[in-house]
Structure formats: structure tokens, C-alpha cells
Amino acid sequence: MTRISTSAAAQAALVDLMRSQRNVFEAQQQLTTGKIAPDLKGSGFRTESLAAAYGARDRAEGYRFSAERVGHKMEITAIALDKLSDAATDLRVAMTAADGTYIMSQAREAFEKARNALSTQHAGAYIFGGTRTDANPITATSLADLVAAPTASDVFVNSSRRPAAKLDDQYTQETGLLADEVGTDLMAAFKRLAEYDAGVNGPFDGPLTDAQYTYLQGEIANVIAAFDGIADKVGENGALQSRVESIVNTQQKKADYLTGLIGDLEDIDMATAATRFQQAQTAVDVAAQTFSVLSQVSLLPFLR
Image (cartoon, rainbow, N blue to C red; front, side):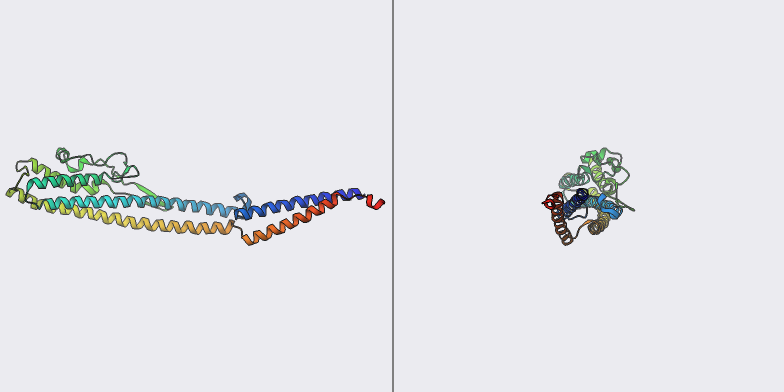
């Protein structure tokens, strides 16, 4: 009877020892990871809330990344628009000169600057191409190409739709301008100048004739109007930039809040974890000693 009860007590002590060792392992894991459990399955009643918080944070971070990428594109767009504005200014200034040869030389340089601005790329895509990003949105490479085109708008091959990006669950933002929107009026001015140069009153070569001077004085107003149109697009792009920057900040704050919420749900209090580890280690020592004593119990001491 004594042997049976001793065996049962030893088995119970072994169970206590194994349980204490498991508690030591879990407490040590908490100290190492700083988490209540190694995965969501071990979070108990917090599992559903944690899964939802993780999903919401991932969406916020995804939207923030998208907004930052859109913001970078708009920064490049702003630089391109500045270059396009400079081209319009260069053309206007050239038209005030008295020497036709100089005017056409400057006009060709201004055209090249404008064409390069409209051909600007970001991350391998043409920023003024709309939803068509694989082809240069302006096909004209010289003033002669403009003269050959039926109209200035015919040298543009961008799509008719601006690209868009989803930056929140309920908000989608257009992310670019179109080449024909920002460049048609200026290209039309270049085309008219080149056509005049190639026409009966041309070429612009040496001192201006009275007819050439009169034409240029009237055309300067058109170039100024083209410049003003570009300036309007600069303002539009700037307004969109401000909106996108606000979205970046909003999504960052949302992600930070959710990160804190996740921490509240799954992070362990390190002082509590350390105390639990010490208590679990003590329990292991006691259980080990108890098991050792019970596993060595014998009737021999009582028979002597």
C-alpha cells in the first residue's frame, strides 16, 4: 500500500515539475521577446482585436507609402513645370530682340527645354503621359515637326485620363497632369513662329522687317497667355501636393496609434515577466526536489 501511494505521489510530483518547467520556458520567452505570446494563437481573447489592429495598421502604412510615392511624383512634376515656365519665358524674351537670327536660335533652345520638360520621367514612367506611361507624350523633336503637324495638339500622344491612386479607404487622388493640358498653348506659339519663319514673310534672318516686328509684338501676348496657363497648372499641382502631404501625416499618425494599441495588447510588462520567471524557477527547484525525494522513498529505513 505504501509503494502504491508513493508511486502516485511521485507521478504527481513529476507532473508538477513538468508544469513548472513549462512555466519557466514561457516566462523566459516573454522576457526574450517582450511579448505576451509568440503568435496570435497564444493571445487568447485578444486574438481578434490584435488581428484587426494589425490589418488596420498594415493598410495605413500601405496608404502612407502610396501617398509618399505620389508626393515624390508631384515634386518631379513641379520641377518639370518650372522648366516649362522657363521655356515660355525664354521664348517671350527672345521675341523682344531686334535680330531675327538670334530670335530663332533662342526659340530652338526654348523649344528643346520645353520638350525635355514634357518628356520628364519618374520611376521609369513619363509623368505627363496620363495612364499611358510607356511612350513619350510629345512626338515633336524639332520646330520642323511642329510645322509638319496639322495642329499643335497633334504632337501629343498622352492618354486622356490622369492616373489615380487610392490613398485611403474612401479617397482616391489623381496623381498627375497631362502633357497636352500643360503644353499645347506653348507648342502652338512655337508652331506659329516656325510657320511664320518658313512663310512668305520669313525667314527671321538678320534685322527684323516691319511685318516681322508687328507679328512678334502680337505673338508675345499669346506666349504670356501660355505662361499664365502653365502657372495655373503649377498652382494646381501645388494644391494636390499639400493634400497628399496631409494624407501622409494622417496615415502616419494612424499607423503610430495602431502600433501603440498593438503594443498594449501584446507587449508584456517586463517587471511582471521577470517576477514570474523567478517564481517559476523557484517552483521548478521545489518540484524537482520533491520528485527526487519521492522517487527515492523505500521501506528499508523502516525495516532496520
